[in-house]
Image 1 (cartoon, one colour):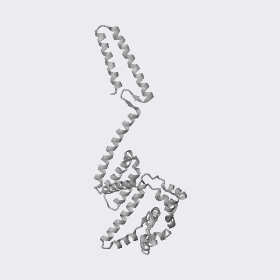
Image 2: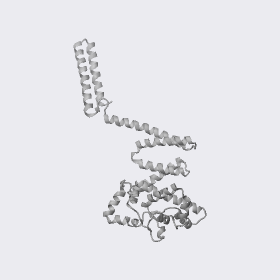
Image 3: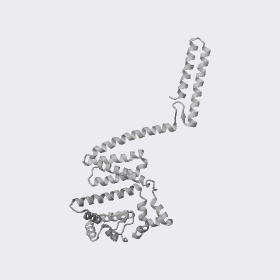
Image 4: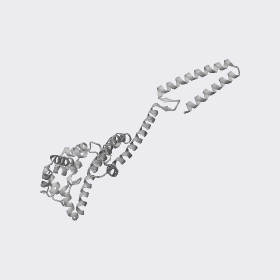
Length: 319
C-alpha cells in the first residue's frame, strides 16, 4: 500500500468517526454535512485517480505504472518459463540414459521446446546455442552420449569465447568478409594479408564464406579440425608408429590449414592451405560423399604425397 492510499484511508475513517460521534450526540445537521463531504471527497478522489492514470499511467492506489505492471507480468512469465526449462532439462538428462526409440523421439521434442524457451533468457546467444547443438549432434553420431557431448561443447564454447575476448575479435561485424574485401582495394596491409592466398587461388567468394561467419563459428571449425587431426595422430602412434610416421599419416588423410603464409620447409604441393578455402573444400567432400564413389577417392588420394596435394589438383589451386 502506498503513501497515497494510506493517507486516503486515514482521512476516510476520521470522517466516518466524526459522523458516528455527531449522530450519537444528536447533531444530525453536522452528521448530514459530513456525509455530504465524504461523498464529494470520494467522488473527487476517484476523478483525480482516473485523471492521473490517464495522463501518466501512475496508479495512486497501488503505486505502480502501467509499464511497471507490464514488466512485473513479464517477470512472472519468465520465471514460469525458467521453471519449465529446468524441468525439461532434467527430464532430458534422464532420457539420455535410455536407448529406446521412443525416448530418443521424446528427447528431440523436448529439445525443440527448450530451444524456444532459451531465447527468452539468452536472446544474444542464439549463435552459441545453434553451434553447440550442431557440434553436439556430430559427437552423438560418433558414439558419445548426448549429455557428455553437450557438456563438452558448452565447455569448449566458453573457452573459445574467452579467447575471442582476449584477442578482441568478439565484436567483429557479421559482414566482416565484405568489409575486408573493400579494405583490400584501398589499404596496402590488407592487400598483403590476402596476396599469398590470392596466389593460391582464393576468390572473393572464399573470403566472404569464411570471414562472414560468426567469429565463434570460425573458431569452432578450427578447433574441431585440430581436434580430429590430433585424435588421428594419437591413434596412429598407439598402433606402434613413430610421431613422424603419424604426422605423415595425418597429412595424408586430412586437409591442413593455416592463417599464416607457409614456410619453405615443406614441398609446395604439401603446404598448408588458407582457411578461406574451408567452405570450398567441404563442399567438394560433400559432393564426393553424395557420389558414393569412396573407393575411387581413396585410390586417387594414394597417388598424392598429401591430402593438400590432392586438393590442389582437384580444385585447380596453385602450389
